Image 1: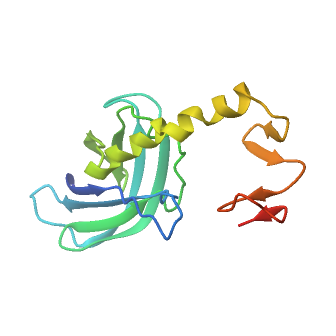
Image 2: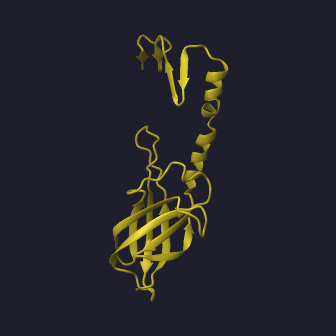
Length: 174
């Protein structure tokens, strides 16, 4: 069996906002290089199992996915982690996460520490946005009996609701 080495050349989390929607794609663009034991770049199709762990060694995988038929050309490959097995929204909770790869049944060591991209730091602000921090307090501390809060749903039982108008003329007036 050929010994393989890995040099991670790029891990990029793409934070793409389409239109006015604030959803973040549930996958990570991942590129790397693979070479044989002599350092020569691979030119073949391989199967790669990816796993994310909370520690650099040991422990149980928090997520894993196997990508069959990964084309490696001049040692370079590129794929999307999470495209086959979705990642949980709580997987990246601010704790360190480590990526392990198994290429054609050979585990590459050491695990690689995943890091964020610069603009990813800005997303932390969403956890502390003024409106989000005070929304529940405003609705529950001074109830006016017009709105009902049921888990993550807020609804108005009677009357009209206006968005962009102070005098709504319909159940929902936008």
